[in-house]
Length: 230
Image 1: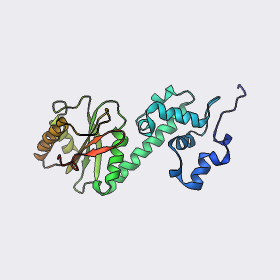
Image 2 (image 1 turned 135 degrees about the horizontal axis):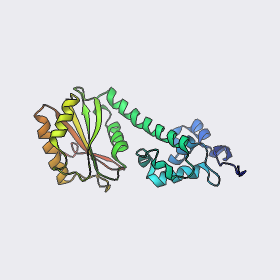
Image 3 (image 1 turned 45 degrees about the vertical axis):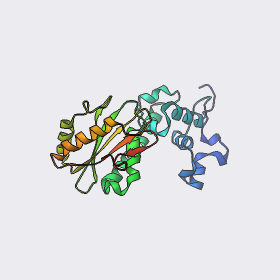
Image 4 (image 1 turned 180 degrees about the vertical axis):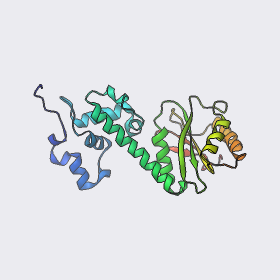
């Protein structure tokens, strides 16, 4: 032991402590840093817990980036031991599962913002392109979310046959297509439009409807159906 105290939340003035602030004013009153500090509880010698939380958010691109971070990736942050890494990953996974559960319990487009939030949590922070599908039942409730293709997505690299097979596997009545633009530009491209029409035609052969295609970035999820491109 070196005798140095671990800077934690108890060392803060009462009105600056995230826990007391949350209980008094509600979780919406806390910043991302404060919420994460509340989860971490303590910092390390020479680094306050709020500084540790700030470092985490900056290193991984904010909350959205953290949601795609593995326990192994968190090892680069000095001061995060195995227990803290496990806690962070567990909480982030709970957030994803909570949104998925909501989408499975009622028609997908009864909660359009929940759809966007879910897709942003799943795809928004990815550094490479990912093509995914939400498979829906006859009442438009979520059956399963699957990532099918990665890399540079074009009509030639996303295979309609594989999409059809997965739709049959899930006994889906409809699907929502989604992929991310790591560039941050959410505007659908001509290639996105061509891919959508190709998949729409392939799925129509097995009587599965394409309800939408979302283009996802860190900041937003744009609906091609709302743009009249479906």
